[in-house]
Length: 261
Image (cartoon, rainbow, N blue to C red):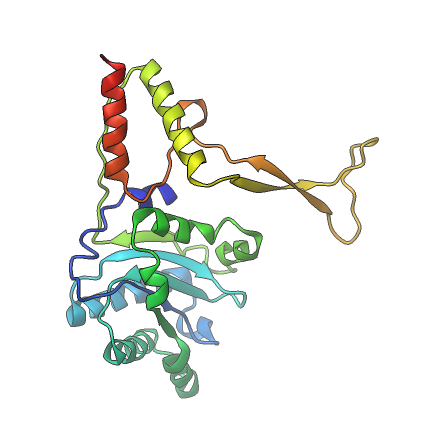
């Protein structure tokens, strides 16, 4: 997901300078299983919402990520460039509640009030491919967010957890020799390491009895943290996320050209 989101051309999403990027969230009512009993129904509701959006505001262009709340209800994060102002917020909350159409009037009224959210601040912070890729991928990388990727019982047909609308990858492939590939990988690895000083990742390691090799257990397995150097482009393969891919690609192309002199 991170690689694909970093490869996308976001030009169509930012084509209208009068529209600011925003993180739009769609959630379900407290009693969500009555109106949305399974994943297939939820995805159909999202498609219906998409059609209503396009009829009202034009093509829905952006990226999305599906997550699950602690109560089991799904919520959809969308990075899009909607109309700004109270008119859009009012339309969003009313339309999404109409699409979900909970039969209980009280639940439906509560859903109108709290079923959606529009965060322009978060959207403005994610204006380049690298930031988009990092934002959407971070939800599955930390323990406190891992529960949001667990599908509740009865929702096994939920389908994809992420995707994009109205965008396409901007990728160009170039054939290089094995020796050139190794040198390019080294170049990109150094580039990734120099961007952040002392960048490390945390690995959770089980505490074991050094004599027996058994994992020590009390109420749960105990862990200690050990820092390891972040690895990129190992064995000449992989990718790095950058803010300006075309600019870095031009620099790498010049480097390869010098190798061939």
